[in-house]
Image (cartoon, rainbow, N blue to C red):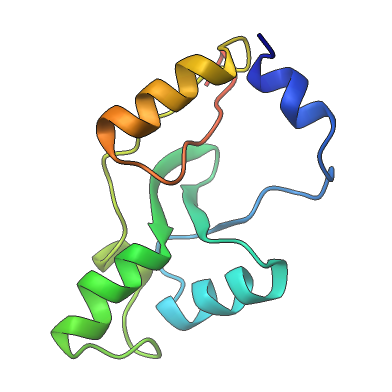
Length: 112
């Protein structure tokens, strides 16, 4: 069974898609569109504060009448982020994603 590290070693080595909590939702949407991705990590320095996803946009912004130009991502991000380690198997990740109904699962090194 392949591990997360095995899978990531075959992917594009572009830098991590992340923004500060003060970035606007518009900034996050533009980054996601530019990279053709569905989520952005919200980081304060090296600390993971949350994740902003297309689902967050649809449910916490669009349906509540907020604007992407004025809303900081910290106000609508998902702060409770489940993460996996590089040594976990793809099967373990799929169990987590299915059980918790997640579409995005950040990978965090052992040292944080």
